Length: 173
Length: 173
Image (cartoon, rainbow over all chains, first blue to last red; front, side, top):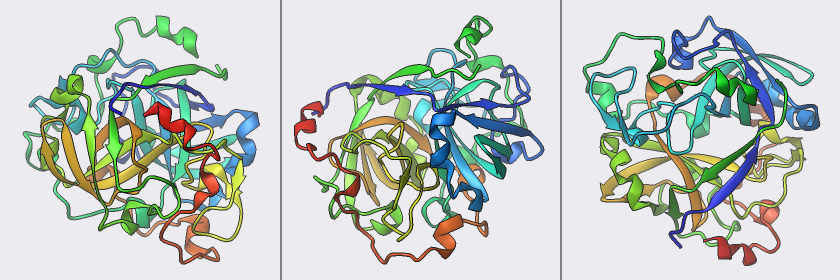
């Protein structure tokens, strides 16, 4: 029952953004309101976009292809203390899946224009889901270290979670 | 640049719930407040849970191992019309990754006790992320068909997205 299982996934598209490397990339969509980008879904999945244009925000799930190997504890961008990887949103994780709630500006064929992008250019897309307030929105709840940490004033990332050979990795794109 | 990429992931734990099959399983955590379950993280990842207990809600990302093959348009549980798979939250997706924001009740070693569970028993866990209000909470935004659809009154799933040979699939667990 408690056995490691291997899963295969395939990218369904590619995320395009102004950010070529981790340094200077916004940490989260809420710190990236002015950053525009687009998501190119592969043509075979185009039909799956029907109805998405009615949603103001969408979740992008993606493969953090330039993240370095995961440590189990890390110092996140927004705190000065170390925390377990599962209590932070850093990209270097046992399964480096990122999740960002971006604003959907328009849908043009296979291309989704979005703002609030905090994702590196060329990132492989795994899934798109609609943001549904009833399912996803919670307020006035405790957020651990984020509420009380010795928070940093940073709004953009640095290279701490990036592969040192990130440029070599570009062959993936 | 726009090339399909294959990614390998490994489960980092297993989700346990009272739900053995899709029929009767709550559709979303907000419809499952009374449903308790637990997440068993494999011992090698235990250190990664440090600090998670301060968070009231957590995201579980998981592999919908009993979902049937994806169609690009489906009729979701909560509407009577058909929509593109990327504008619904159904489990049968090109990459069947599910995402649920559950309430974290307590952390006991490698075991996370949670409520609001809408996930099938034995589901492989891919990732845990803290729910951070500043990053994840949006209100008063348009939610497409969900806002105006001929909505169903359902709160629990049926078998429409389940493999017909789901029991055979239990060998995965």
